[in-house]
Image 1 (tube, rainbow over the protein chains, first blue to last red):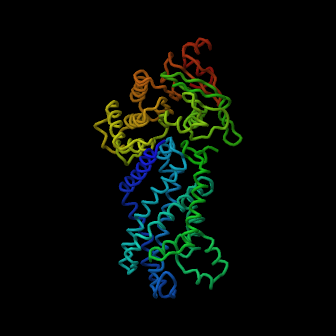
Image 2: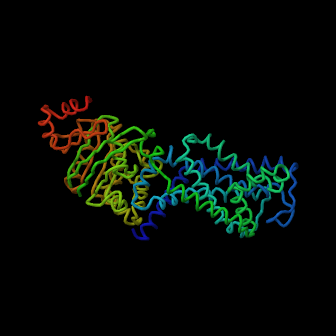
Image 3: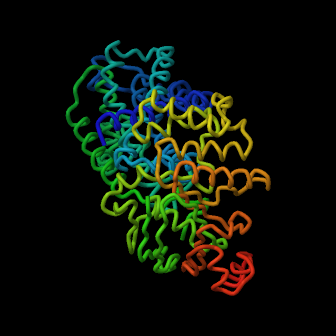
Length: 268
Length: 240
C-alpha cells in the first residue's frame, strides 16, 4: 500500500464524518445546549459562591464563566467521544464499521483515523461554543483560538480511544446511561473543569489526588493554558502520553467479535 | 481466483460454531453455501472477511494466506453483508465514494468506477438520491455495486436477499450469476432458501458447524439418493 492509498482513505473517512455531521446538524446543534446551560445558568449561580484568585494562565481576576469555559470545551469532547465510540461498536455506526473494517489498510490506522474524524466534528462544536461564550464575556486572546487546536485534537483522540476501549471490553457499560454514570460524570466532576485544584486540595486532599490522576484534568489544563497562549508542558505531556497509550491499547485490543459489528446480535 | 479453506474451527467461548471445515472454491464459479439458521454461515463469513480472527486453520485466497498477508487478501474480496451496511442519509454516490476511499482509490477514480458500476446496475439516475429513498432491491444492488468497486476476484454475499420480495430475490440472484459468467468472478452466496440454488451450482451444505456436503448439486442429490436439492437439504439437516 502506497502513501497515496492512506491519504485517500484518510480523506474519505473525514469526508464521510462531515457529510454525516451536515445531515444531522440539528442534533449536533442541540448537543451545544448542555455546555451552554452550564456556562450561562450554572456559572451565574456559582459565581457568587466560588471566588477565583489569580492563578496561571490568567493574569488577572477572572469571572467563573471564564474559568469553566475550557472545562466545558473538554466536556463537549468527552460526551461526543463516548457517544461516538459506543455507536461505533453497538448501534448506529455498525454498518459503516463493517465497511470500514473491510479496507485492506491496517486496522489501527483505520480506527485512529475514524476517531480523529469524529474528533474533528467535536472540535467544530467546541469552536461554535467558544464563539457563543463571547456573549458572556469569555474572551481569550485571538491567537488562543488557533493555539488551542492541538490540545483539542489530542483530547478528542484520547477520549475517543478511551471510549473505544471501554465500549469493546466492558460489557456492563454498553449503553450510554452506564457510560454517563460511571465514566463521563466521574471524569468531569473529578477534574479541574469546574473548580481549580487548589480549592479541591483545601476541601479534600484525597479528592485532589484523584483529580491529579485523572487524565481529563490535564487535558482541560492543556486546553486552558493554550487558549490563553501559555505553555504547560506537564499538562501537554501527560495528555499526549495517555493518548498514545490509550490509542495503542484501543486499536491493538480491538476485537469485532466483542461488539455487534459481526452480526445483529452479539455472540456470547 | 481459487479460495482454499482448510481445517477451520471456531468457538465462541465454550460453544463450538465451526468444526474442521475445509473446502476449495473454484475460480469464476457460483457457489451456494446452504445451511439453516444457526448453521455457522455468518461465522464462516466473519472468518473469510477477517471480522473474526482465525482460531484454527487458514484461508488462502489465490495462494495468499489471510493469516500472513491479510492486506493483499482483503484487496481481492468484495462483501455484501446480511444487514444493511449503507449509510441511509448519504447519497448512493457518497456511499460508493466512501468505500472506494477505504480501498485507497482517489475521488476521480472512485467517481469513474462508481458510475460504471451504477450504469451496469441501471442505477446511474439514482446516484444523487439518498439511499433512504431507494427500495430494498435497489439498496441491495447498490451494495453489490459497492462491493465490486475495487475490482475484487471473490464476491461474498451473506444472505443478500433477506427482506426482499420474491421478484427482487430472483432478479438479484440472476444478476449475480450474470456477473459470475461475464466477469469471471468467484461467488460465494450464503442462503437458507433452497429456491436460490440450482442443481448445477456448486453446493456446500453446512449444518451445526460441519460441512455435510460439498460438490455439484446434481451429484450431491445422486449420492444421497434424493430427487432434488430440497429433499437432500431436508434429509441432511432436518430443515427446509
